[in-house]
Image (cartoon, rainbow, N blue to C red):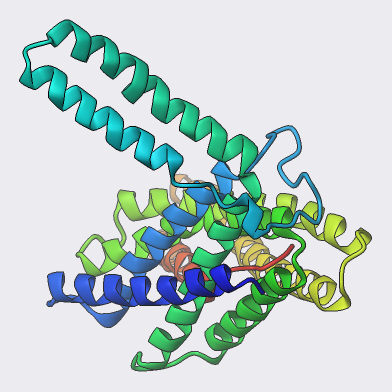
Length: 341
């Protein structure tokens, strides 16, 4: 692994640790998990942003396959110096009252310049951005693994997934390949994370069982399903059919199987709720209506109505249970960063 990547990772671990301590200091009355999820949400936004910037062509997001990065791709400081000179030039123009000069200079250098810099970074140095994105997530995983050990109830599944993610990303960086695939996997896994974290944050803020949390539940379930069960299998296929080391292929397949298992568990719960709903909340009300409108003794009508009310109550409880179970199944993914799909 290149020395500059190691430096990025070490700096990243220190950055995420400092961010957590800052958040912890700001939200002193909130739980450990709340503050950690705030940091996780920040990481998800940064990771998805960097992953998106590193895509060279959205027609083939994982191209080029087995991409590499080297020190030759590190941009020089001339762009930064150029913009510093530009700022000084604008200030000088304003100081001497040359408003027209300052305006033209601003448009040419400080609007066109940053755009040209952006094009340069994303066109000439896309692999550098990939490596930075992976270093950001690798450093976050290391931080979060340590952070989870200080939680009240450390979860073994979280620890295992952190270790798997760390090994997977580190292997890709060490082998100098799979940059595009790992960044694509990071994008797929992180794109749903903010919705999961927002649900838990809203619960602690007192918005449990509200329409807002329900909206985040639905968005998370939909995005998770599309990312993990549509994009994930495709990326796994690309990884398995490429000429990659066995360790990377094993990581990709294993983590995709874990995603598929969780998805199956969620579908099973939803199927149970759907069957119960059809039986009790479609057939039940009809049968209750027939009973109440027939010439039956009052006791029988009261029993029919009472049983239907009990079914409605249990239907409500099942809906809450399904929401809770889905959130619990997804909870390990708070920090799961699939290295390669």
